[in-house]
Image (cartoon, rainbow, N blue to C red; front, side, top):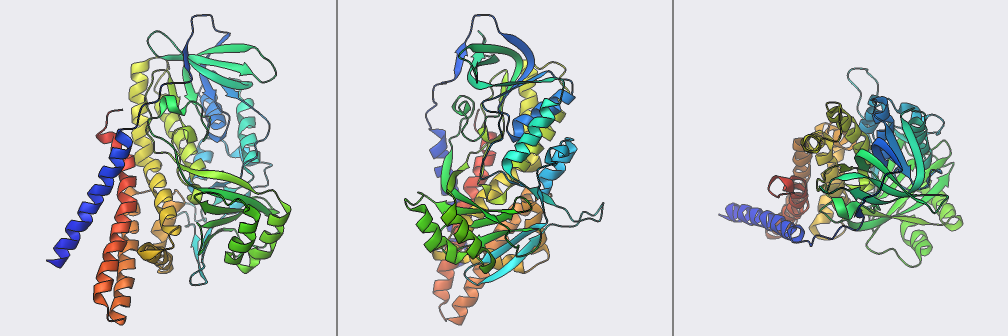
Amino acid sequence: MLYLSLIAAILSSALISIAVYLRSTRWQAKKAPNHIISFDGSFSETTEVVIVGAGILGSSLAAVLARDGRKVCLIERDMSEPDRIVGELLQPGGFHALKKLGLEGSLEGTDCHTVFGYVVHDCNSNTSVALSYPVNIATGEIETGKSFHHGRFVSGLRKQAIEEPNVSIIEGTAQYLIEDDSNAIVGVQYKEKDGEKIKTIKADLTFIADGCFSKFRKDLVSSSVTVASNFVGVIMHNVPQYKKGHAEIVLSNVGGPILIYQISSTCTRVLVDVPSKVPSDLKEYMISIIAPQLPDHIRGPFLKSVKEQRLRTMPNSFLPPKAIYKPGVLILGDAFNMRHPLTGAGMSVALNDIVLLRQVLQDMPSLNEHYILQRVYERFLWKRKNSHSFVINILAQALYAVFSSHEGCMNEMRQACFEYFKLGGMALSGPVGLLSVLHPSPVVLVGHFFAVAFYAIYREAKKGLASLRPDKAVFNSFMIFYGACKIMFPLLASELEFLWRKR
């Protein structure tokens, strides 16, 4: 009877957490569109495709569609090399997509670094475990990712787009989407960078890819952005690696996880996750709180860089993929779907999205047939969910929730996750396959997540028996499983919600 009661309580808590999530999203007020206008005049120019935003996704998509024979106009506010502290690590699954798109030349001249996996350092036990990428069975070579300066990679992708004869570049700010009498988007109004003149461009299809701070999101996405933490970034110079070719994750005793990875032959990036509000005296926080958590080979260079550099921050956002289809326009990339950057999979999602989008659009000779485009877009959303986005979105949020836990029974789950990796075999290869975006299986994801939860329960039971407190062990075991359900089930609901909710 005790076990039946526990199972009933667990299922009830899972259903309650899903219901609370759905209630919090179902009754969100619809915001009135702010950046869609009607237009009765003549257009300044005409093209087949307009892409707003020349970042990772926008530049890649422009080059690929141009190679497929589409006439593309790429609108970007500033074509100079961007400078960001995230978007610097491309997982092996993303690198495969880059090569599949024929855009690997964008890495030339970036002084990029080859990544063979991760090393996870645990501050509680002062031990480490390596999560190395697997060997490709077909080639016999180790799978690899790439890390680089974000701006150099974006510039390389823009160069690929610019070199295509079918691509025209407009350096200016997209101000409004233009709709016709049938409420279909037929073009974009923009302002050139070096002039005051407002111009318009007509297009069969407009793509919105203006990134995490998208101005058009509220018009095209039904969900809202939530920010759980911030990354504080700093660059160290000429720092030795703990394990050659491996990025590092530090599970600290305060705050969130800390990422360390080399982005060139001389530069190493450190990203410190700061939950909730960034401290007012950020340098003091880095020196007195964060530095003692770091491995010995990092601590000295980190302190030197913190004292000498301006610390930069970036919000870590979560945005479930809930697009509102509007004829004539599709929204993609971080404007449409974001997850915590802990797993470094954002660019892999974007590039794999382009692979799928290219496939479904190749069946459409004309892009202004709105009914057919809607069916094609729905097929694309299904394909991306089945292919990669479902797993990557949930993995990033769930892993961050576990790794940033410091109190109560969830701290035990964090410790169990680290010890689970140490078991090796499938306990290591399965999670690495997910993290690398090489084998993003939903069944493997959910299976390993709850395997970690049960491993935490097993460890708790052993402690309870050793301390002769089985009652406490039963209670803690319940709280561990409840905490796991509270993390996983709302995330599953956020991905599957479209099955029972009308767009």
